[in-house]
Length: 291
Image 1 (cartoon, rainbow, N blue to C red):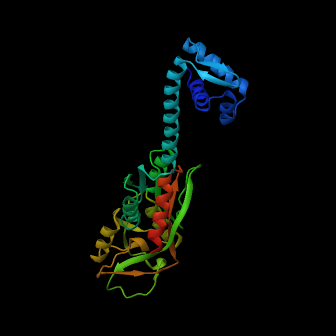
Image 2: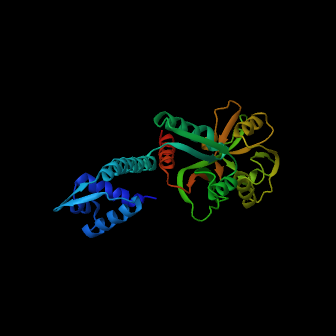
Image 3: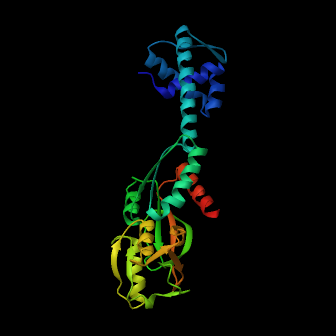
């Protein structure tokens, strides 16, 4: 079998017509190139070059092999260019996980912008709770995760994961429109019925911790992932809810009150890969938030 490394060297010898000039182009020594040619002749079972002073002349077999070697060298160079372009291009699959409250107003618009700019990008999206999405990120089944971290319940990020804080925001108490207070003291919410994201979610744990710190054991009757549905429950007078700014909606039957003490959360992006599509998505997310 003919060695590819020796074929590449032979292609350079055929191109330059000289062992010395071929060696210079390949950053090898002249004797080293000559040794490769002799081994290639042994592999081919025939003479490939004839010396004419300081230059060489290809034999008929050498000319035939040089044509193929040159084509192979050009193909290898093109393959290297293809790989290099893929490594710097925003293309292919981009697997994104996000908490529901970040999907509609943040992730979806960012992916829409990216898809228009990079038509060869193929986004895939799943929603879920931060702890589950970060676990999938750690196991390399997701490329980027947008998750939440509450001041009363900071998220735990696995080792080796790169984290970017996208946005820090206030969380307000959503109450029925006939509630005329200007500020809601959490310590005064002992009689309130709550709607919150399901048990196990960061939002659920944050609410429980915040109210317990205020001396209250919350009465939770409605566990709903979707903030729009939580607000429908508030508007109906069935519950109150802690709603982050990005999840607020203009609803006639709901008012949003700042809390005492204040409750805040941040949206963060975590990644375990540096593919260009991840960097492009981070830029798009920050662009959406800056508008």
